[in-house]
Length: 277
Ligand code: MBD
Ligand code: FE
Image 1: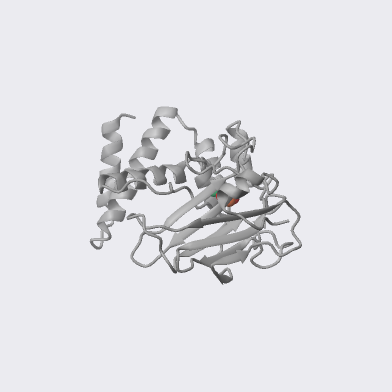
Image 2: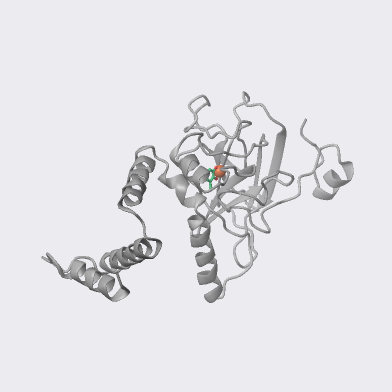
C-alpha cells in the first residue's frame, strides 16, 4: 500500500461518524499516531499475528501495572526530559542541577521533617549514608522552606509500598529546608533496581536482548512556591550499571563523590565535625 492511500485512510478516519468538534489537539495527535502506525506496519510488513501479539502485550503490561515501567525502558521518559531541557534553554534558563526521570515508584504522602530526617526504619540492612545540601533558586540564593522529597530502594533494590515486606514509607521522606535553605538526611545506601523477573517489561527486554537493571540511585523532587519543580536523582559511583542503565536515567552532574567517615581530610573539607558511626 502506498503513502497516499494511507493518508486517504487517515483522512477518512478523521471525517467519518463526526457528531461534534471534538478536541482538536487529541484529533491531531491520534490522527498522526494512526498514520505513523499504518506506515510502520506497511514498511515492516507486520503480520496480523504480530499486530495482535503487540496489542495483547500492551494489554498485559497495562493489567499488571507495568506500562509505567516500559516507558522509561524505551528511553521515552529520558527523551521527554531532553525536550524539557531544550525548552528551558530556549527560555534562557541554564545551569543548576540537571533533571532526570521520575520513574514509576514515587508514592505521595511521605512523613514530613523539618531540616533533617532519617529515611530508614532501623530494620533495613546497609551501609549508613549521610547526604546534605542547599536548595537554591536560579539566582543562586538559598531557598528556606523548600520541600525536598527523597525516595530510594533498599538493600535488595526494592521500594517500600510496592514491596509489602517493608514498613510504610521506609526510605521515603519529605524534608523542608531550614532558614539557610539546607536539608540533611541519614539513610542506608541503596542497591540498584531490576525489573520484576518474568513481568511484561522483562519479557520485552528479553526480546530486545537487553537487561533490566538500573544503577543504585536516590530520587528527588524539589519544590518551592514560585519556582518550577525539579525532578532528579543521584547515582552511586562505582555501580557496574552506572552508565548502562536500562531506563537512561544517569546524567553527567548527577554522580556525586561519596566520602568515607574514615577520610579525616575529606570530613574536614566538608566541615563535618561529628561523623556518623
Ligand atoms: C526505578 O527505580 C526507576 O527509578 C525507574 C526510572 C524505573 C524503574 C525503576
Ligand atoms: Fe528508582
